[in-house]
Image (cartoon, rainbow over all chains, first blue to last red; front, side, top):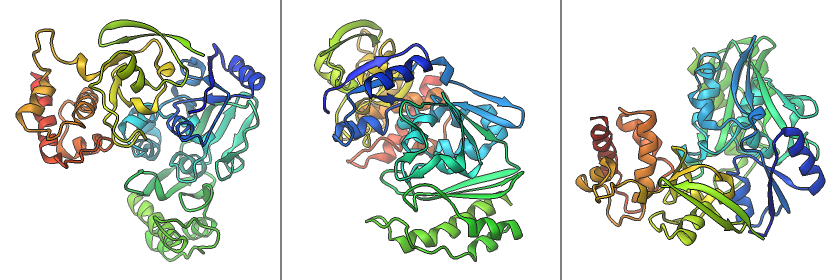
Length: 263
Length: 157
């Protein structure tokens, strides 16, 4: 690790000011960031530790939405009665991230800000059409994920909470890469007030919506309808774990499994 | 550069000045000489470095010491009684032959304690899922699962 300075702030506003002033980086649970720093893939001069900021904690039901603080850990989301009752697919998604130790440190906001192409949370946020709240504005999920490790967040902009509209029903099915437990491909299917939404992670440079699957499932919400869809491999990820064609094939297969789980 | 750090380790208050880069596992092993916490992969995969932070199992090779300032840390050295009596989970690993080379054992035991705190009567599948982040390269998983079940039952008494 290169040397760095680590600071704490007593409010989100103060943390954002510190980041702006130092050109530093926010530290959430650090489960990706610390690993990247150890590999010298990341070398922030200053880390601003967000742990302990109570404004960023907690899970609450707000009308027809579930609002989760950015620093809420995966293990807390997975175990929360409010999440299990309102959006069980989100609790199950959180329960499937990494392993127990990672879920005990990793946070919702950290995962979204990092936007790893194979992370699970982006699929849940995009699939449910959630709204990302920051210290400056609100950003619709459709506008948040911009590309490989890239989001709509500006310099010094911090995610404060995420508001998930409660869907009619939803399911997430992940084909896990067995060593890392990241998604080789993960598909989140939701029936919402605004129609069917299908978000795919692990397959492309960033999470994306599969319009062909959404259209097919809007016509007939069956596993067979999902399975009949063909997704082109163009632009999808290809690596030693699976070719682009393999990932393209997995997308409708997993979407069908998600739909079957909802039957 | 260094930062002041105060935390509790195995029930004892600890204060030290550490380099910002110090990982929790380095602090435990080098500064406090608590070498029961092992470094296996050093990439947050194998779980040999698992310790409890305020009761939650975490991988101490992927957490900065500065991140756990003020927290209560439990390492494998903090489990046995003052007279050397093993914690029921440690005793169960011994009884069930839940270890061969023993390298992964501290992480397995602490991971198991986090599991039991949440699922006191976990079935085999739950135990296997809960220990996904702990690798045993002797592949002694059968007896590890048995040990966790035995340890959990002993703790419930």
